[in-house]
Image (cartoon, rainbow, N blue to C red):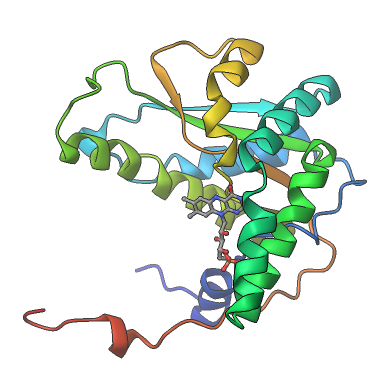
Length: 214
Ligand SMILES: Cc1cc2nc3c(=O)[nH]c(=O)nc-3n(C[C@H](O)[C@H](O)[C@H](O)COP(=O)(O)O)c2cc1C
């Protein structure tokens, strides 16, 4: 039987953060490390074992600039407004997240690698029942998270972002992504500055778990 080193496993699971300010924008990332992490992510579950995922990896600086512009258009003034609102209500942790998100929005083009996970969605009608859409998202997010965990284990970091999706058509055109593929996220990927990430403050499991009934 395989046994796991729980200390290491739990540290990986509890310290894989959304990395923005600590992405090392100046250090190149090898193609092989990205491919290894994508390869590992393919062990994730998918509905009906469809494995409809595709990964678009962009290192070209001109293309990253266009993607970053789409991301910033998607951000608009959302982060500035959200940060001010968080400060007003004294939510300093939220204000820090919005500040960090603004940093990433400003620097998105500098992340050495942009990874766009996509999923085959041609078979799903726009008015398909909720379970179909949940199944679709549920068939790619586990793989995305595995990809992020694999990066972290190798000294790299990433941030799952979605604010570019208001402009996904422009990005699909730029990268030749077929109409049947749905972009799910945009992950800026880089080596991290240091690797000493900490668990975030989260409510205890007792507070959010209902045993036997709600
Ligand atoms: C579905 C989803 C969409 C997200 N979109 C964005 C985004 O567009 N921009 C961003 O900076 N972070 C985005 N995040 C990252 C969250 O802000 C982040 O996970 C959260 O603040 C918790 O931080 P932590 O992962 O470091 O604990 C997204 C996360 C998820 C799960």
